[in-house]
Image (cartoon, rainbow, N blue to C red; front, side, top):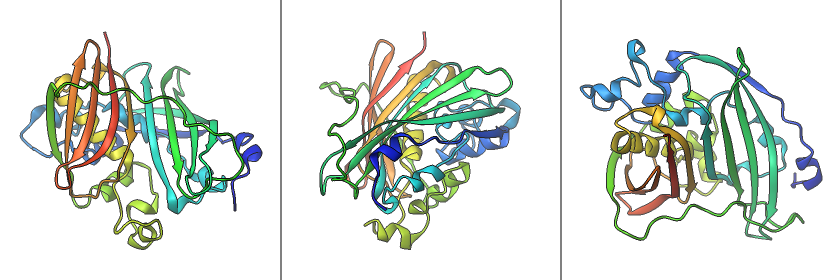
Length: 284
């Protein structure tokens, strides 16, 4: 089934509701490497219920619903996450009932053999108050779907990384089963778990979720720039540039300029750039 531009742009995506608890918050924390050092009390605050804090990037898995993507005509075996932009309108509570509303913003045709780019927005509100908690804007890169006759384009310009040496670095190690742990927070895409499905997409083995790698980068920024205070982060953006395989080591480089932290992340073992054009906006 090929992409039908008019049908896709007119698609009405059902809203999704989720009641999440501190258990879900702790599970997400484990999914992005919190608690790896059981004696680090700052990290334990994200995985213990008596002092629980919420990692800002958890908003990317709340009220998760990707079923509609399989109705777009996109070849999902060749679809990868391109970019993610998060705006936090208030700190995320450790437990709540939320409603997510998703809409497609735009679709760009890169041409035959070059793929297509889709932008979609998810707004998440607290059901009890109607308050807007966060807005996510995601870019999906459909590698196998260029040339469907849509408009050209590439979406928003990426955040520039400073040319000077990094002001700080943070190295975190992923687990061999990191993707299997992370997928319990919502994203069950078999690309991250099923070797045969990954092979059909051209990967030698299942890859780590891009949003999990983003969560590790947020972990790094929280550690180095925010003293593990999640209320300090008001926005978190990134471009995904290369896949990560579970078990690899992630090194995040950071630059601080006022209330903006620019960042990028590499896999140490392969010296591969996996996150680029990162921007963390600090509150206050």
